[in-house]
Image (cartoon, rainbow, N blue to C red):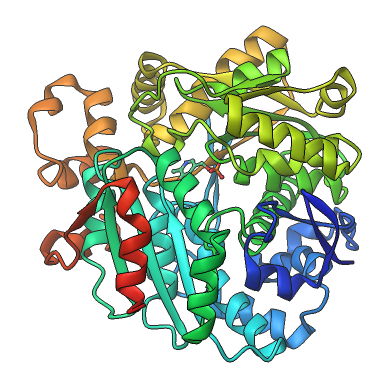
Length: 493
Ligand SMILES: *Cc1c(COP(=O)(O)O)cnc(C)c1O
């Protein structure tokens, strides 16, 4: 097993080298040479803890990590930082299963991967005798930033710089980031949208001049974005874990197929579900749910990816993305691993903002179905689910839940469905509480904390308690064109 680049098949790296590098020098993403199979029987899954499941899933992908190294990483990541021993609980509501991925430190699903990534990286650096200080450069649509900051804060031998769209995140998201205290962290607001931030960060990764300068001073860039294979691989684990849970609870028999419906932005989470299917997990359809920025919905319908459209700011900001980076991995696989073909499509995307895939490639993607929900449909879903069951979901999860309702009706599909619940409703207080009762619109986010706690009958998460009183540490705001300069200044270059 080795990792190659989606833009150059001659690249051959070990898993730990790929984790360390983050992104290939040619701008491509690392993909495993093959998808390993699960070597545990489906009826055994239900008896395994989250940590045991994670090990079984990850060992095939991270084949050059020793058993001891990998188990250490897993046990350091999935511990009491999570507020439930189950790590990823499954909650039934109206016949669907919500896989709650928000019980980590920053109450969004990014914690599932970013709790372990620092450990995978530090281990990778040791394995590869790298004595360079690792500099994490990250663009965030809101949740990655804080989860990465929490993961890397105070970790020796690392520094982290986070760029976020100044006017494109929720109040809670911004406060969580700009109150990060540790001295190895830097948070910068950008006057642009997430795509601008992400494109610039990718450019900086490929900047030879910057790389040489960094190298000279003993630094090495790595990425905490979901383009890093060290983000993707840990995410495969919870799909396998959820399946085991369904079997154990007698909701399905081992071997029955399930649907996974995933609120999608950068296409990382749903790609992990696809990897789970390819490992041998019985999956029927992968429903890729979009908000009003429905590039992916259109893509799966027509075979044309076209980002030439207005960027819409929605109530599910972590999905406000028009360039879904991880889709490149699926594109590459769908060409039969044709690096040249993939490269030319990605060049089209860069130059014309769009590309078209062939019928064969489209046929390769039949596991995926695009679905989407408008702002009104999401708000209505939050309200009706709450009124019917008392269960409160966040705005991103609502995109998936509302889109799934539409999909299952349209396609007459009654397969057992697992909906990825990607954030705590406390992270998007105002939007969630306004959906339930429009008079909350007038309230301040902070006033709504206790209202939501009472409404949903759940305790206020620690992550929210933390920002109630914290002071602001980071207040730098810049233009897109100033990002490189600020990275250099932060690094003292
Ligand atoms: C990041 C994020 C998503 C989108 O996940 P991708 O892996 O980028 O597709 C959805 N919901 C929430 C709450 C997120 O933070």
